Image (cartoon, rainbow, N blue to C red; front, side):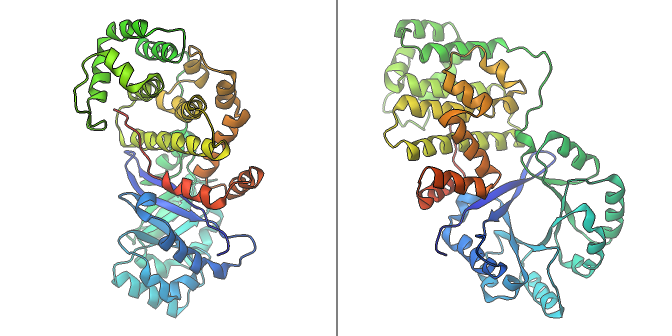
Length: 407
C-alpha cells in the first residue's frame, strides 16, 4: 500500500463489564476495490504489534470470500483471531468445505453486523450456523418481536449473540432487555447522571489541593499543611511515591520531600487520577473506562507534541488535564459542569471540555474520532495540520494499551 492504514477497535463486553474481545476495523482507501481486503488484512497482522492492540483477549477480524479462499488465511493466528464473515458473503460448496476445514484446525467464525431488515437473508445462511461461534446483530431498530423470531431460528445452534453499535446507556438497556449476553460499543463511557447530586467533601478536598498546586501564589508550607491536615491523602501519596514505580533508593517520609522530588505538576496530575480513584469501584466496566481515560491522556499529549513540538510543560499539562477530565462525568456520574465549577481553570480548558473549542477542543475531537474509527475525520485532521500519516499511525498504535498509575 502506498500509505499507512489505520486500525481501530471496539470492546465486546459481557453484562458484568468483563472484556471478552475486540472488534477490529481497518480502512480500505476509497480508490481501492474489495479485492484489496486480503492484502489489507495481511498488512494489519504483519505491520501492527498485535499485543498492543488486543492485550490478553481475542480480536474479531472481518474477512471476505477472497480472503477465505486465499492461502494467506493460514497465517492468521487462530489463538488470537475470530474470523468474521459478512452476511453478504457468497458461499458455494467450496467455501463451505474451506470453513469446515478451518474449523477442524481450530479456527472460530462469526457472522457480523446483521441488521433488523436482513432477517429473511439469515434463513439462507442456516447451513452455516453449525460452524459459527458468534452472531453479531446491529442494535439499531431492534424489536422484541424480531428477537423472538431470531432466537427460535437459532435455538438448535450453540451460537453466542453480540449486539453491535451499543454506544448509549439507552441502547445498552435495550440489548440487555432482549437477551443479548454480549454487547459491542462504548456505552460505558456515557454518563449516568444523578439529578441534584452535590460534590462530596473528599472530592472538594482534592480539587482544593489541585488548585493550590497549580497556583504560583501557594507556598510549599501551605501545601504541606493542607496535606498534613488530610491524613488519608498523605498516606496515599506516600504509598504512591514509595512504590516500585519510582525505584527510589531512600524511603520518602514527608510531604516536603515529595514536593521537592516530584514537583508540583506531576503531583497535580497524580491528584487528578486520585480524584477518579475515589469514584472507581474496580468493576470490570470501570476498569475499561480507566483504560480509556489513560489512552486519552496519552493521545492528547502525543498529538499536542506533534502539533507544537516546542510545547511547554504547562501546555502539555493542560492537554493531560483535558484528556483526564473528558470522561470524568462518566466516572463520577455527575454533570461535567458541576465537577469543574470549583476548579480554577483557564478559559481554553473550559472551552475545550464543555464546547470542544480551541486547539485542545480540536484534539479532544480527534481522540474521540480515533475511538469511533472515524477515518474521514482523522484524514482531514492530518491534512489540515500537514502531519505525517506515519507519525500519527505510530502514535495511535503505541497508545493502544497505554496505562497510568491509578491506585
